[in-house]
Length: 297
Image 1 (cartoon, rainbow, N blue to C red):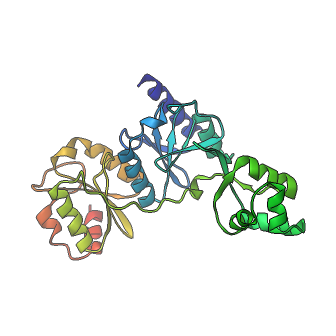
Image 2 (spheres, rainbow, N blue to C red):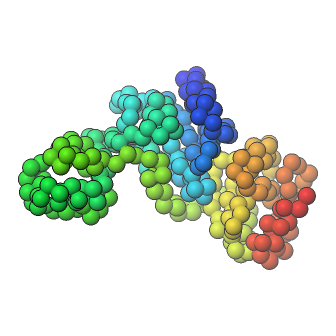
Image 3 (cartoon, one colour):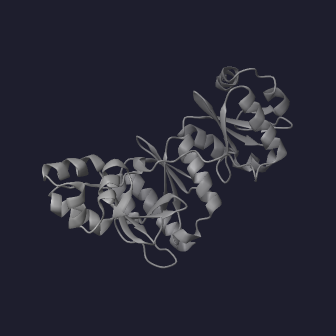
């Protein structure tokens, strides 16, 4: 825990030095950092300690806020995390603090580290143009690096990874840089399937009401809120009593993310965010009506 705390303080200072706004929360993410875009950062000394459930929630948050998820750590179960290599844990890009600083200062790494070795992405259009400029057929180029014509064809038409050493050979032969930098925005997050395994019947009913009046919704765990709802504007909702002590975090994160905070309960209570009973939610007939209600002072 001490190592994680030291890491966290180091990374918070790093973001502040690069003029990012930050929000701290110890759940599926530890730091949300925002400048032009938002990053959700999970910090672990050993990245293999990341649980799949946390990774899923991290992806849900990233997708909903058009943000980038990152895992930052020092080691795996097998090795120390090396500088300027990008690892992966449950589909989340993973780096050490030094590489994170390179990323936020726009010095992007290029190499992925997987169990099978080192890989890169190459620019298919640049590969095709460079090959033609050198007046080589796909077969001739393939023979020079001991791969098939089909392999060259696929890399000229698809965004698929290639062994780092093969990519370097291609660059030397073609006299052209074709390896693509790894940028957070290149990390496509397909919206995960909704998961309600941890959600109560009451939470599911609230989600159903949001959907009825036209909101796109996602269920989230281990975050400052339980339900994400969007229709033009974002609503972050906590439900019932289990999150009453967490409402201050909900309010602050709503301000940080330009969203509307809401508490839905069986019985209304006075608190720092707007609170309604579920039966009141059932009376709204449209998403616009609920958003206008939340905007009222």
